[in-house]
Image 1 (spheres, rainbow, N blue to C red):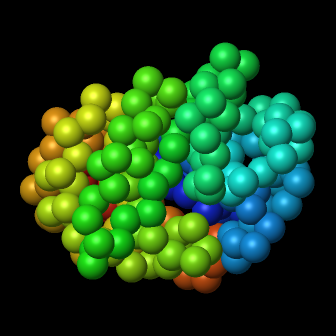
Image 2: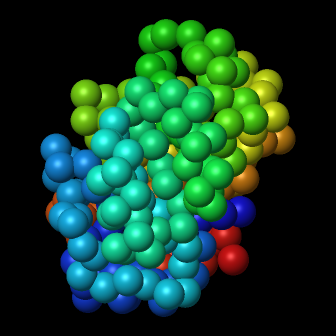
Length: 203
């Protein structure tokens, strides 16, 4: 299982979390997010894959930030089109398209289907005005309606108390989890001890 720790910013915290055995680390380049990392990472970790999180970003700026910060994976949370995703793939990036899921609405099968074959992974998160990071969950049972072929990461308010539920969640395309606000002391500052214990349960 891929474990991604997202919303990192503080150098000392990044260095600590890097040692915990996560596979990917996410940095948010969306200025309206409380976890906005700015233009340049304070420290570029080497033992994890570096993920840049963007929302409707200008392509030239996105590519400049990706080069400056040596990003390997681009996670797109806005209205980016399938062609936008494919164009970034062709430039050598792994591309994740994120979808906000609202428990009170049907799973967006048609929307997700448009991106089949245009990106490497999907990420299913709780729909919010700020495109994620709310600390709230959606009903994971809704994902039984996802029958696409693109593997996905489960996101949305996963916390230390959810280890058993994560282990019990079964879907043929679920290949990882995204950990963020449920493991925070404050926005962008992760509780290293909680992460260490949680990650250890999956290693």
